[in-house]
Image (tube, rainbow, N blue to C red):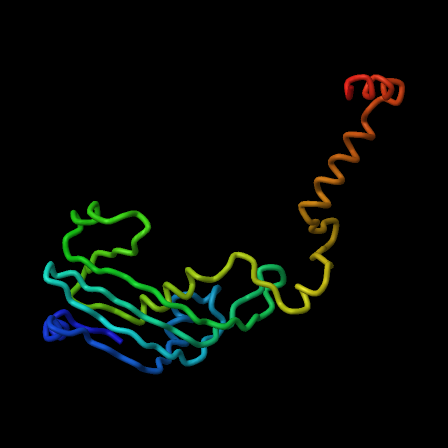
Length: 181
């Protein structure tokens, strides 16, 4: 869905509302080939509102499913998408200082508002850093290879502590108890 600003001028009095099913799988694979492996058709509801100061507000609710690689094994993982986001588009870049850093405000660089791109960007931004398959969640087995293996942070700390204790000269062990009082 792309809207030209001239089209949106008609909706100054009331917002442009939409309720559509979008097929964005090919665009997702083109823009995020290593992040998005597959994307079901997305149900998209929302509106675009034009403000008096020529700002555009994009409000969207998206539902669907996305297939992404596991962060541990790169196996495909199907995740649900159910998100709502708001974005504001302004024409003058100098006005960016008027907004809080936490607000999603973008400069509209062309005369076209590309809703598809905004949806994909928000889907990718909402993905967690750790994505695991059901088997990986259920198993404590971590990846390993020739002369290497992954360990948990807890295991690392325990091994470090054990190594430090082993380095303590047994003849000085009695002194260690002396400082605990």
